[in-house]
Image (cartoon, each protein chain N blue to C red):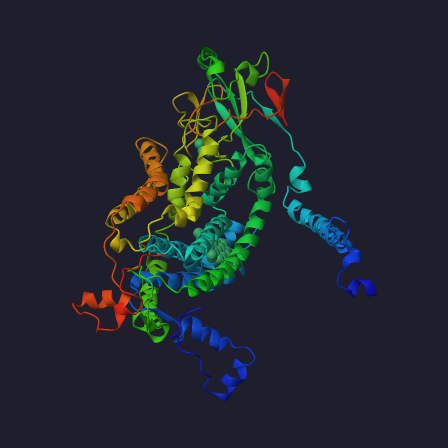
Length: 188
Length: 438
Ligand code: HEM
Ligand code: FES
């Protein structure tokens, strides 16, 4: 097209000093940017969890063999779950603190199921940087608050699995679960 | 590039002339590493470490590519494939030890290289961009080494990957999404291992590219030197070849000797025994630590144990660890002293050594369990680290009384041997006033 090879002259300019060309440049640039974004997104999104990873699994857990003061560790979705039967003393210790003063304020009742306060079921994943805290297995260190102790950077959890000292921001996470009978739960 | 008195490349053969007018590669080498590159004549052995770092990278790439021929990036067999390299692959044990020890040596060399730059003020104008590119290389190295360490899929690999990727979850709002995206799941698993292998293979070549920029940026002003005084004339320089090629080869010989001692006699001295236990997602080892070269940063991460100023301890730790490195990017503008070399900065020199001691102390704290007194010591050492760069350095730059600079490199070299420059040369070339950095 002949007009496109000509240098801009007075007629091409609007009153504001814009040329028809300016619009074409901006339109081309915008189109290219949208196109680039459309290509980049799949390249980024491929790194998100694939369908098989997202397929959620649930497990049934038998609590009958857990004595008061004992806990078991079971794997669930690649992470450990701690299931503990609290002793009356541990329950009393957890209820004695004023939840409002805690870093992540929650009462023991909010972290357990009604009528089943003695069963504390949490993820065994420190909310700091993801280590597995000590204290679920026999003879492991349980920290100054008698719950769990994370060896990685020294986070301490109390008997309700609430964060009390150290760098972790949150209480140990309580997974979704439901009692199927007085001594068995389904997690997930 | 280079000084006016640099020798010019003259092809001596017909083939040389043929190539010179088509692809002048020999000309490039001649001007960059050959007789055509005038270099300050007073460089000491600390100036060998740049070349050593380059060699260390080449060793990593060569051994890495051959390891990649036998390694399997699948959580079910990754650990076994490394053991298979150690036991069954011909000379596999040697290649793997060269790669593992090589990573440690690479960092050791780069740390000396960085502290050399700090001591002689090599980050100051006109070498700021050179310094920034070096820091980019350092960041890429840390990412590469971290991902390489995960490939072994031992206990330290797994829990190191867990802890380091969890750092990203401290970011407000989008943190969890980033964390999941990085891992390709909710905890380190097959997707994680695979992408780490892919990136661990890629990043060293990116590092190689940045090194080319780094060397390019070096060749514009040329090397700094132990006096920190600018080159003033031909009497201040010697051609890179044969003077520094010889010196570098000698240093390389010493380096490779020490390297060989470690590879053959102490291959696991710098590593963690726990990484010979296969990864177990249900049990964290009682004491997890990164490799020694990341310990100082790990200590800064651990220094924050309580929330304050409405920012959670976890986020503080992550921010502090990041800023510990990012701070170095601002150093050329934090240190405004016109004098480069610490040889002429009596006060700054003292604090340079305090910083070295502080970094070593941080390294020690990083390797300890989170117990007193190490937590408190780590907090104080971290506080000092930041105070050093943000308070002490700017203050010293303003108030320090520096020593008189030599008139030229040549004069300082001659003075060392009790001689004065012949009249009309050395000092008089670029004016006789002591020349601070511009
Ligand atoms: C910047 C350069 C590099 C650094 C700092 C580096 C660092 C590391 C480290 C620290 C390990 C763990 C060593 C151990 O404990 O066994 C490792 C493993 C590995 N690296 Fe690299 N690496 C580099 C370049 C490469 C390249 C270019 C490849 C090419 C594929 C590669 C392939 C591997 C493989 C296959 C492993 C796992 C086998 C093993 O543990 O020996 N690396 N790397
Ligand atoms: S991961 Fe538990 S304290 Fe850091």
